[in-house]
Length: 271
Image (cartoon, rainbow, N blue to C red; front, side, top):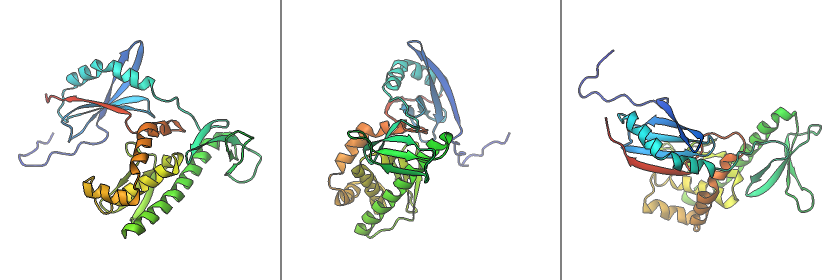
């Protein structure tokens, strides 16, 4: 095995440097993923909605023994947070999901032409999201439709806000993001969660404006928030909606790791 010479940079930790603990509380066993992060200075425990587990980040040389003690000490907290998570809702016929803040009912129309469309529901009922094709492909068609609609809404919103500031995004990418609703790279590429199309329109519009503002200020300084306020004067309303309802969007369809619902921190001693 090679040795590292003095002055050489330490190798970067890989995202695959993950282990896990299983912790039991009140008869239930919960999995806690372990990730060592080069910049971590303490133990941070987060509950993730979509995977219904917890994630502990810790310093590169943090003690796994101390990490396990920390996790076990907060087993009740983990269990309580997981119990509060909404029940997952697959994209299947008869299920309901929000589209632009309005609940729609998924209806399978196997003999119809087309792919996915919306039509009025019964009197007093929600609008119908109609899906053709074979039953095993309903979920994929629904997700593809949501991604298409999200892209259209975000492209329009980004163009509108960019024109106001005289900037231009390099590209717009949609993903089922694991920790952020949106992001802006140093090269000007904007990334968004396609799940934003399920939120009320003012929430998606705010996220588009937020990332466009980062094309001017790549930080969250006072100057950045002044630019954001120029685009969305009442942006606090959208932030409040995301804080109170955002995690609920992660239960629809097949979801990845969701933005953390809550976190605990403690000093992480280095072994």
